[in-house]
Length: 603
Image (cartoon, rainbow, N blue to C red; front, top):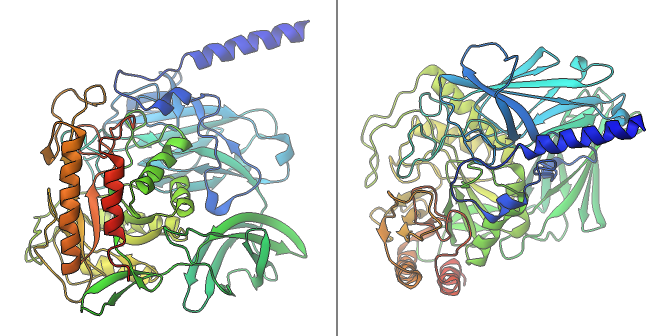
């Protein structure tokens, strides 16, 4: 009887706790916001490129406080926040501005499952913006800087042998009052600049692992040799331990290869099925660590056979190629922002939706604009078949911007700390996405934002990843380096520069605006590069720009990027409204012209 009464009281307390959370503010929201279960927030496995069977999600309600920077951990917290939604977002339940003068404190308790006994326990963060300090049971176990990449700690030595565990995270982010990469975030949002994002914004999770385990997998396909190179980074492996890689076509095992830990494997893939947006075939892979004949760790992964390159065509124009054939890459500028979650999509279904709609619209590419997404976003791109141009999120300050000529000015000189941080975060982003076949182009700079030492950064980027193309400076401050010349022109396409040695691409154009009442972030100050009154007018203009682009493709353009996938805050130039509830253009007409553009170089 006492046990029943206790459980009843516990359930009442839990219901009261969960009832305390609700979306904050009165801004527009997506339909997915209504599907959030605070007891099961973003429950999907967060790292599909290296998936283990056992893990525990720490998303949900945490205690939080916003305090002046430099203060000690609070004794009493301000309230509860729904992790992993940023503090400034509606779905966090907080929706407060933090600012560089403050820090956010997070706290929650957890229990390690009994069947994890004898295992090492990893604490994983998908991403935290920007500087995170982490404590377990009142012991500071580590720090991390960088708002866009995952990081982990082995917390095993700091866990209590029995009972609960205490986890505390402190986060500072100066937004635009520092040199850190921040993309479109500013302290005073306006125009093309958006609301700040602070704190935990991707899944937090635990997983049990062996002392001898896999830490990272890197795959590089070579379709010309019918091979895939697999590098497996391990932790704790000793001399004599072996890494085994098995490749599968569906359920059929097609290859198995072994090497001592640390050695790269080059595995034959006979009669390789090539990956493309039209046929996004993925091979699966099992990777194991074997010590004294026993498997100590095993993960599931995948890879694709595809190649990106450039080549001069029969008309003397240097073209982008996919799998050794000229291929016009065409897609929208994708900011990856949400009215309810800001940086964080409310559900995995929502995360996938924008990609699927991009395919439905007839595009074959996405330019991920000055933001990096959770790992599941890139896996959705891999599975659905869409090429990705990956921007480095911009930061620091801008030098002068020259867009209609090769750069003749003086570049910005970053401080030593700023430059070192840029290099660190750029390398971490590349490491994070190195094995995703959808990522075909690295974009280190956009429109002079924080641009510095372009030839040097481009040379390093190309040498670090020779399997992909590098777009050196999208939209301006051009140098004769890298793999393409990237022009921006609004509203319609124009080719005011041409490079005879590299592909010339139209990295941004369009921005056709249509404000739809009931779907606006702000009731005033909405803008597009041009604005119209209804869907037909916008679609007419879109098709007109598409027909113009087709003519420029014959003259030399090898890729195009239309602005943009959705409205974002004060920008109302999306193909969809910010809440994703209305497709603003006539979809079939958009698809027809887009398919003409995508197939324009087919022979």
